[in-house]
Image (tube, rainbow, N blue to C red; front, side, top):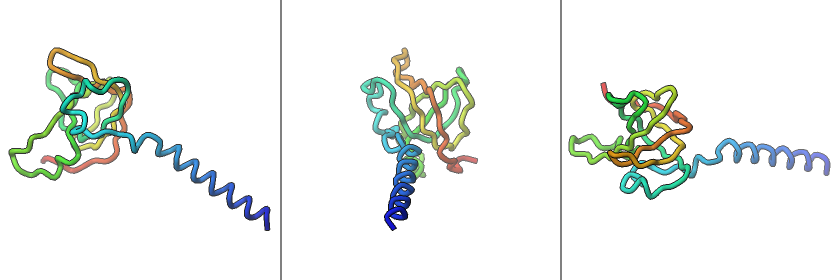
Length: 128
């Protein structure tokens, strides 16, 4: 009986540990509206969650993200905050909810987020 209880407890501990390891960092992601007002106030590596809005016409390695809450705004007068993200890999698609990990740097136009890692969480069917 003691061996069965010990086996069950070990199995439960292993499952709990696996869940903690696979979800580590997801709860610490900031939203675009949290960092958009003063992005340079965030130093070091951070994770930001947002919706991919489009790719820069002048630099195809830069795309913009906006806050997830803005998906609920259906009028033309929404005041969306966009964060430019530079990434040297495959681009997410418009409407992808992304979790980008990297850091902000100062550029002549303001602030630019350089992503070291991008994770597509899901796609929101937006646009045409």
